[in-house]
Length: 345
Image (spheres, rainbow, N blue to C red):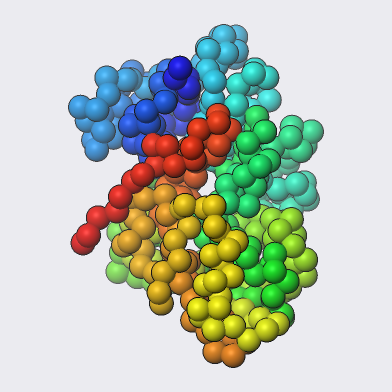
């Protein structure tokens, strides 16, 4: 029995990666994929990497009077829409259909923080409380029983996976500094000032200091993992590459840890998490690009510990994690359809 899937917003980078992964998923049938600007065009015409792999065409988003009927045919609906649009769509989805939202619309439980960081009102606060945060490695059991999933942000995924074991073990002391860098695809498919790749390819700069929308998301989830009361300094930078996130996370631990001691602590925490790989020294974004892996490495000196976290912002940071969550929600092995191998070189 196939899982009948729909994708709202199939023309962006997140939608393209959902299609790339789900077209090869052994237990999925894609029934609907929308892209208003490309309605009527073949998927392979818009995403040339998918040329010849499917005969599907994009459709316009269903009108309100026909939406319920079309979406009711689905088992799972992925919302790969710009921030703000899922607020309108999610309340209309029939109650038997699972929803995985890749935007930030339902990540934050605090309406005031949502307004501050996303610039709009949380218009569905009751529905927001039903959403489960979709970091599979820390919320697996809740995800298993959930109907509504809010997929984490890419920076949040890299940071949370690097900090969760230490917070759970009560090992953090003092300030935490996250120095995170991302490729240009994290800004989406539409070019804009300071996000367009030609602007970024020979440059390097910080952006959104102290104001990044993933900060309240990170702190919210760390409080769920353990006793998080630390000060977080979170800085993001533009990497001159197309895809990949690399975060250096600087912490002070309560007990002196060697790099090997940190590795053992993390290995125990992630013992059931296939997609978290613990590597010697520093990871490399080239090792994780196009895959659903997050690679973590360590450097230590006394009570000073640095966690290095690397992932593909479009896969483990977005579409791959969404499919991982779908697998868990539908009772499948979470690796299904996600054994994506990176390239070398």
